[in-house]
Image 1 (cartoon, rainbow, N blue to C red):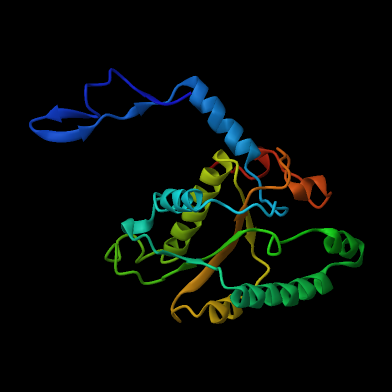
Image 2 (image 1 turned 135 degrees about the vertical axis):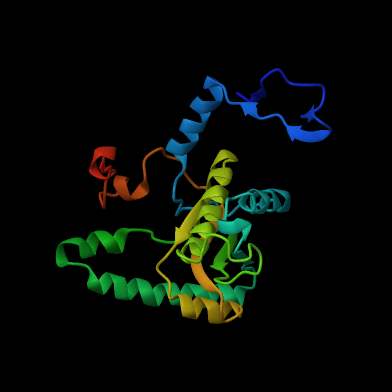
Length: 233
C-alpha cells in the first residue's frame, strides 16, 4: 500500500541540467483506500489508557506536525509540552471552571446529556501539548497574511490536523480540549504575552477505538451529508 514512484531512477532524484529534482510518488488504489480508512477512524479521543507514550513516538509526531503547510512558510505554531504536575493542575482547574459555566448555559433538555459527556482527557492522557500561534512570526516575512492575518492561526490548526492524522495512523489518540480560558492557560504555562492559544491537545493510546464519533454515539450530534454545507455559485 505504499506510494511508488513512476519509473523510479536509481536514486530518488532525477537529473535535469545538473539540478536535483525529486521524483514525485504515485499513490495507488491501495494507498488511497488506506487513507480513506484513516480519515474514517480518526477520532477526537477522550478516553485514554494510562500507558505512557514512547519518547521516540512523541518526537515522531512533532516532526510530522512540522511538515504542515503554513502561510508564507512562516511555521507560526508554538508547541508547549506540558509536563509539570502543577501546570497541568492549573489547566485542569481552568477546564473545570469553564465546563461548569458551559453546563449552566445549556438548555434544560440538554443539560443532563452535557453533564454525562466526557469532554477532556486531562486526567489520563500521558502527553499534553498546548498549541499557540505567534501572530507576527519573523519567518515568512509577512507573505500571504497582509489581507488575511487570520491565516497565521489557520496554519497552526493545520499543524494540529497533520499531527492528528499522523497519530491516528500510528494507533495513537488525540483529543482537542477547547473548553478553556486562553488567558488562564497562557498564564499557567508562562508563555510570551503575544502568543495566542489555538488548542490544547491530550495525546496517548486510546482506551477504545471506533469509526463513529463519540458525540454521535452519545446522542449529542450527528454527521450531516455533504449537501448540507456545499454551496455552488
